[in-house]
Image (cartoon, rainbow, N blue to C red; front, side, top):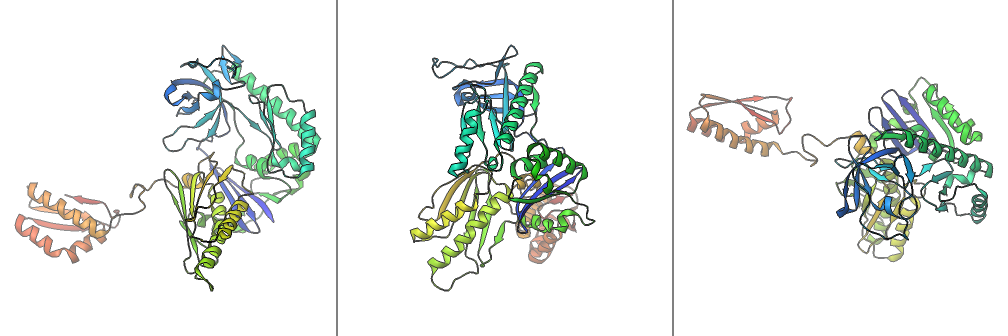
Length: 492
């Protein structure tokens, strides 16, 4: 049974999607942390950089967004605003030449990726407005159907609808996977709603002063309901009465027959404790994940990519090394996919499976990994397993990963993931003591550090301390302070 559990607090909204009691996806949105992905802005071009074919656009959120020039000067229409009128941009038939874009021009853009680290948001002028069943594209004439709709008869019915649909010339529409549960009337109603929404966006774009927000994407609960709520979901439980009413109204508009699957949770025990979600959340951030057969996977997140290493661990198998590697890799493939979706990891991902000599084993592991991602809403590209067991893949990154929302870089180790040993700190401290004893005029030096460092000085470096006192004719007083970090030392 798959269900969605929505917990709402004044400071945080959380959404958990479970399958047969196991946590499948988990998302967090916190008050005070701006959400930009999906929002449409009327921005101002701050700078044009032809060397990298890009623009930097001020959208009023602090960091300038990054926009490729080709987005505004490619084929079709664009969202370039000139004298308060949305104008068409140069088509492919026109001669290419120096960009006509300049600082101070206004442009209608949509955030594709949230700002990450020092990078501003990634923008596009190829705007799309998603509904539950359709995605309307005002500047793109593409008409398409989700590849995940594989049934031939279903695709033919959708094509018939698209042929009759009143889609304005020069605009496009993509039919989403969830349309399989919708009839022609629902698709028609949603298309009408999206067209009306785009009309309001254009009206605001003409009237509001840039930089400004023109259209705001739904918050986490409504976004989840729109993108995930279908016949496969057994029920939705919401622990906030206000949020429950909002979701119920929303579902009533888009798919009223699913309204009976939404429930307001009234229990005395907190929702996530009742269903064991808090325990699952604690395990999300562990670096090492144990597999049922005794093996494990280790997840390392770096600046450029995420590396996942597969180990046999305690599992040695009963036949031969090849069979052991195959069984471990099969279990690891499913678990790696689950962890990637659960942590919402995006960008470049490399999975280092245990070496397998048999080609049929490598194919089977690849198929297992591919099938495990079938439920994933993000776009994924998986390369075949190399002879040495490496899989390179990319996963669409739109918002910050769960880890980056929940954690920050360690202020003590500066992201290294390690701290110096007491012995190392002690040796460095002795060097510092030598300098201060040589330069200082005081007859006594006070040395304050973590108790482990003080203990190391007293036990392993006592002779060195006595020697320093004898040569300098000064007293060294050691002061342990358990409140200090092991790398912090102070001389007085």
